[in-house]
Length: 91
Image (cartoon, rainbow, N blue to C red; front, side, top):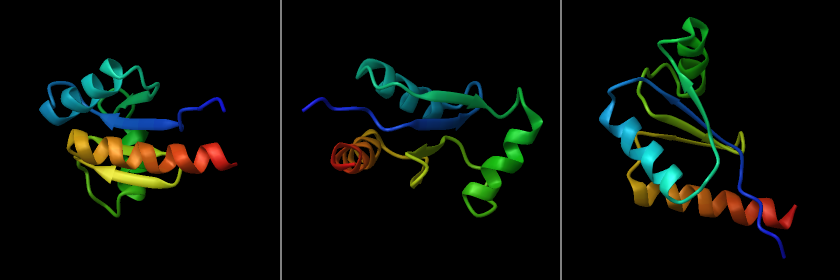
């Protein structure tokens, strides 16, 4: 069975230590993701706030348009990805 990574979108901003850590975790584990810098695109701040109930916290990470995690540890991020990976495999 071929494993397909779930779609991952990360709202971030420059110089955010949690964003840098999450980005490094994804890159070091060769997990593809799309990064949205909230300072480069003004509308992305409002999109992010809708997703996470008004909070303007980064990183906000959406996995498979299903799971939202805010400021996760590396362990929590991998746990959420693994959960969604299992869902992706069964589809």
